[in-house]
Each structure stands twice: as structure tokens, then as C-alpha cells.
Length: 429
Image (tube, rainbow, N blue to C red; front, side, top):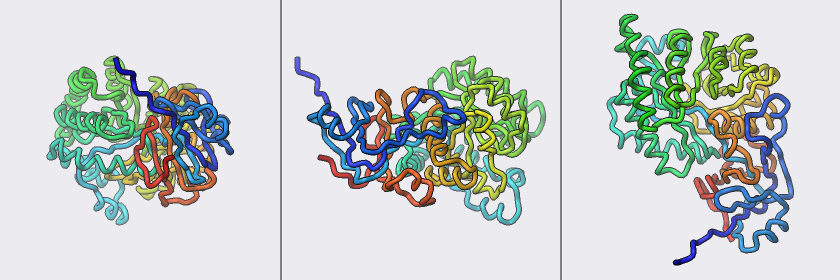
């Protein structure tokens, strides 16, 4: 019997800072978010796809004498960024809507004219799986090129059983083929389809289809880890959202919510009541909603890129959420209509400049707390012994530069489980 080949350790050397985010494997709250665990004078050793140690380079070389080394050229090493809210499977971009907003049309008026989500629904329904894969593959890898190693990807532009399953099969194939970590979410409750808007009975029929047909089919096929619902005025009511999410939980899926994006509709309160894994958007969350989230384990995921792109001046009240001890995450909301950016460091810049987060708070929100928003905080989101070696290397000398060079791509390389995901020209010895 031949011996199993064991890969030698890898040491990430010549690092100006290692931003470990080390700590408990759960979402961070309040003052905990002010500590990103920045260390200097150390390297990182990776063995068997996991972080083996963070220690001075001489100690690592002694401990792992046969290790190969990656020269990080004085850059900053962070946990791979965790983008816990994207809509990465879509057809054509919706650039014409940007001009419509500039002309004074708001989100709901664009939707009433057949734009918005309904436009992407018509488009996706007409595309086959191979076309969707060909479109999504470079888009998701562009996210990785900015430092993201974990990407939640939602369905939600199909809104029929067949088209939602088609989308989730595309996500499953990309999960197998791409080097990034992908988390699939079923969002059949993204909108009420236009064909179900003509009457209350037709609307009810679609909710029934979600609860009794679509969720069971998705769960039986193992195509999603989470179910999501857009609880918003004009979309799904609190009662409908509760019914849909309860069915999802009973089917074995985790639950997430689009909540209080444009109006205070009770979404945050429902997320807290159901102890949803995350409540996302929250630009219009009420004081009562903040208090409810503070009493739950739900992560508040805020999406400043969306509000910026929509031309809104009011962002989610991130400071009040943190001060209320609500765990806060940042995400891109990458989608074709309201946040078409793969640039997660830009979202960190908005977190600092628009949401008034400290750099440490923004980094924790984009790593540990993003992982918690996907129930992954016990394995990704920090550089500490035993965690998956999901890493991002940036061409900066201080972590405070990451949100400072806004719009610039300073990512040199990303690694998932210690394996190269995106890389430029790092020297390996």
C-alpha cells in the first residue's frame, strides 16, 4: 500500500500586518467590534487547508521546517472577506434604470413601469442554464479579485418553480467549479410575480405555491442552505413573510430576511421574533426594530452600496445598531439593478465615510460578522488556529488604507482553504 501524500505547510511571510479578527466563533457585538486583532511582526502558517499558527516568522520556520513560503511583499493579510448578501445570477445589466432614477423616478415607480426585479425576472426566464453559468462565472470571480472568498448567492429572478430550481442548479454547479466558497439561498419570495398581481386570490396562490410546492422541492433537492423573503411595503407583508419563513424552517432551511429597506414595515421585528440568521438592508428600521434585534441573535446586514447607487441620503443607522449591541455585518448586495459592484473594499469605505464605522468595525463587519450572517462563524472569518485558511492579501501597509483608497483594487491575492483563488504574481519559495 502506497503512503498518502501529505502537502507541506505554507508560510505567508513578509507581512506588514496580519488582521486576525481572532476571538469567539460567533457574531461580535458593541465594543467587541472595535478589535480587529491586528498583529505585526508575525506570519501565518497553513497546514491541511487550515490556519496552523500565527507567530513570528522565526518560530514558524522552526515549527514547519519543510514549509514553502509565499512572499507577501509587505502587504496586509486579512481573513477573506465574507459577502453575505448577493444576487449574482442574472442576465443583462439594468443600466437604463440609473438614468431613470437620475430623471426623478423612484424604485417603486420603476417597478410599476415593468423595470426593477420584474425586468430581471423576464430576462432570466428566457435564459438556459449554460448561458447563466457563462454570465455568472466571471462576475463571481470578479468579486474574488477584490478580496472576497465567501459569497452568498440568492435565487429570486425566476419566481416560478422551474426557474427558481434552474437558478439554484446554476449556483450548485458554480459551487463545484469555482474556487470561491459559495452559500446558496432560495429567494422565491423576492417579489410577487406580475402574473400573480391581478387579484388577492392570485397573490394568495403564489404564497401557497412557495409554502407547499417550491420550498419543499428546494429542500428535498438540497439546493439551498437558506430561504429569504423580501418583507417590504408593496412586496410581502409581515404575515406572509412569517408564513413563508416558518415553512422554510420546518423544511430544514435557515432563514434570512430583506427587512425595512424602504419603509419601516415590521421586518426587523419579525426577524428578531423568528431569530432569523440575518435581517438585511434595514435603511428604514425603526427604534422598536433595533430594540428587537438587540434581544435576538440575528445579524443586521447593512448594504450602503445600494443606498448610494439609489441616490438615497439616508443609510441604515449602523452606529445606533452597534450602540444597541446588535451584531452588524456589511455586504455588497451585488445585483443588476441597485448595487452592481463587486468591490467589497468600496463597501468598507462607505461603511467608514457614510455609516461612521471605525476601520476595525468595518473589517469585523466584513469578515467575522459576515460569516455569522451565514452561520459560518465557527470556521471562516478569522485568521486563527483551526479556521479555514481563507485569506486576502492587500497591497497596503496598514489596514486603515483598505477603506482609504476607495474604489481602487488593492487586492493582490485570495486563498480559500489555503488554495489559490485569485492571484497576481506572488513569489513562492
